[in-house]
Image 1 (cartoon, one colour):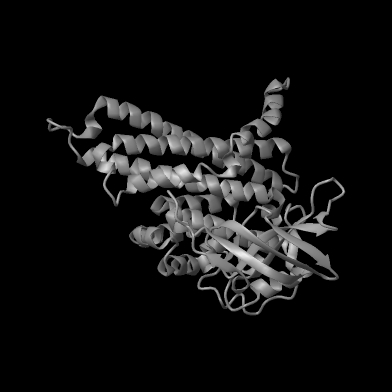
Image 2 (spheres, rainbow, N blue to C red):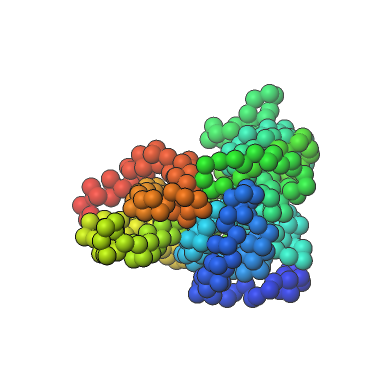
Length: 402
């Protein structure tokens, strides 16, 4: 693919800034994101101010390859950035996670021709993607003709390109791959090609703009499509070697960890400022509060350390040019699912410990509770994920050298 002469001049800051710099950029946005959180919930999507600020800070492209203008950063850096943004507002963290995951998929999975089309403009693009293959298409020469309606297009309101998945049809039935699976393709199309259905009225994560959208029937060039099973990475180095599942799931757990971190901060602040009824002592001086806070803080720290540790181990394997092992993938599944459960438990504790101080809107603890409750319903942390990951972990413990 030809070098893009616009890429080095269209960025506000150099893309290879380093992990600490990207995290500091996220921290610099905290006050803005916090101040816009109520507006995001009312509007159902992030404000333009927040989107523009995250765009200027280049937070959408931390994982994208450097040759495309991205940072090519470590997945650990990406997780830390998401955690920091989610600490300011869960919806902002979730939206950044969804957009950056979709944009990384576009950067790593799509053809050279289509990548040049999407990334070759005067500014880096933002993508939105939904994984469920609810579209249908047929193959016509060097193109596909299809349509579909999709749910959960997080961050789609400010996306430049949108991808939906299609089950390819042959003779009125799904075309099958050699392994017997249906052939499923994704395709990034300009957002102008889709219709948004403004129906995002939900309990939590209200500011993510996860609208349903429709792709009216249209012809899509084959070069615009990619394998929706994500088994044919074309570029991306370590990130591609880790695999789409790893960075998508790691992003999800980073968001809920950020929400849990904020809940602990809020209840600690409230407890040090408010006094127990009928006494001059603060809530924080109460032995029961101290004991419960320490137990839940330990749960948070353990879940966070577990998630970051398993990702670090898998990334180290990929950096050595070795394939990420099935056990490492199982560990990521385990840590992500457990991290969601732990985060939800921590937030539920903080909300309950806040008592009447958590009930009146606007309530940061109330928002944390709503957001983490919805985030924990995601299919990637379904209880089945633990069941499916278990054989590798059990085998490891049963090994003679365990």
